[in-house]
Image (cartoon, rainbow, N blue to C red):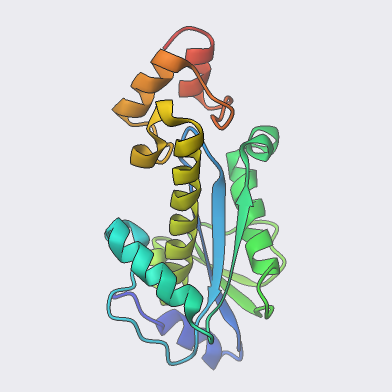
Length: 206
């Protein structure tokens, strides 16, 4: 099934008017925040290249991000949960908190949300969870791009602050380069110290 507004149309046929897509970026990395985005698209929205952000190049994501966020009829919001909160409540709860906050920050409250992946409990608005939803729903795909680009830009800022780790290249994910730099320099303030690979370097086991 192509990425489309088919799921949104089905929900509108059931009486829902404003439908937001919700997705996150940064659940898996060893460093940096987790970012969630929510997006409400116009009923007749069309886009030639928008799809799952993982299927797009960085240049395509940047261009689509700029188009989406400059579009007057697209409502969107992002929520950023930092390392301190991730460490305190764990990454799954932090991801769910970011999703809830992104929806709550939308300029117009939706009456239904399409969430990428599994259901989020609790959630303030009725939801439909779609596995691989960012490849099925244009609303989720829009949220996916907004979340990914927002987080990538934050990681570029962190790369300038902590240049020894190569964050501009791997965005905090556990690549060979990142693990090598962790071994050489130890964790920095944005590393998730409760994540096992980082713990190993803290304990001298890496």
